[in-house]
Image (cartoon, rainbow, N blue to C red):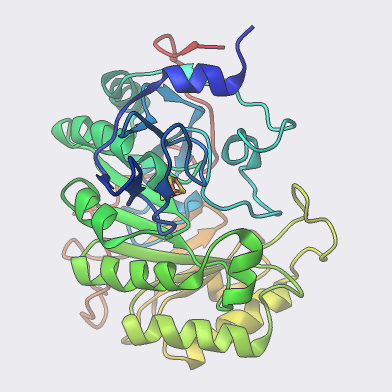
Length: 373
Ligand code: SF4
């Protein structure tokens, strides 16, 4: 029986995000590592490799698909209530010990992470998304930047079918990959894990490319929301949160910032689970820094108004939520507060079309996706 690596090495095609450099090496631009890759070797992510001076990249499979309310991604200012059809491949450029998607992200590093790939085509994914009633196609679960060529192939089909497209990403990008994505992507969620470069080194990255990606996404006009998983004792000091929030507010005070509760996962089992008061403290720091839309997630019903979208002009509640469930929607067809006329930043439909689901589910019709192990 073939190993996972052997199987995945068959599921590749020449990539587009690289250049040839001296001594038959190539430099990959898909993520902020910008790996110089020797002939016969793979990059840090282990899924892109140099063979004969060509960079081969993942193609033609998914590690999993799932339908979620878009609020789970989380996007709170992009078509509230929409169904998001999520797909992912395998591998990651970081190795976070608390990863909640470690079964797919660490599949090539950790023998415990078993996630059999399924054969897929862009057409089949889009058809499946449409059958479920999805409005948005999201590349997530593994780090989508490292499989950007495949995401763009899927997104081209998605946009032709009238769907919106999104990344849920660690944000470890490059100017080249963002330019490459720009024509095909509507929304981008960056998981800003810390504001301390030493913490990013523990996770296998650097903070510089991530902050640069956030600035560039905003400048490119791609709708951007930020999430920070608040881990007690790791990234939750007042000082670190203040610097993080001030950075975001400096890019734009209208970028939504989600602080979400950690629960013990994968190899990180020492910290306590995040409490509601920790989320509320972080949210207060965000508001003091000038951020207008701060949300607290993963503890439904325990964080008061911090699940709701409130008008930055008059303070009125515009969207009331319980977890992923939308209880009330009051944004006007032109994306404004109906009471004071304040423009609310985001991407809004002409009207709220209801919510197909307030919980994740595996799509029922997956006949096109066949296991390839
Ligand atoms: S995606 Fe990132 S980690 Fe992978 S080869 Fe390219 S630069 Fe290296």
